[in-house]
Length: 102
View (cartoon, rainbow, N blue to C red):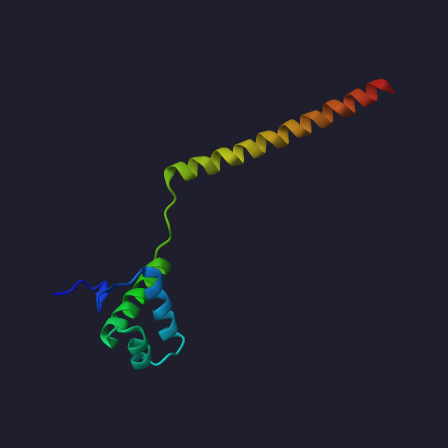
């Protein structure tokens, strides 16, 4: 049994497979596309099916945030709050100083 990544002794990259599958999905005729690329129609349809299944899985599930990402987000919000507080306190101090000089 041959390796499914090989056809006619040529190794196909994922990028090239995607390009061919996208051509098929855009309406190219399967027989001609397979012939031009030196692959069988069944191989082409297999790539298409796996490509579409991968997209389905990608759209079905939300990516779970890594706990580190959650902590980074929490800390970024906290830095924003503290920065705002510092700016407010600096403005209050400036206004008090201005009033004292009057």
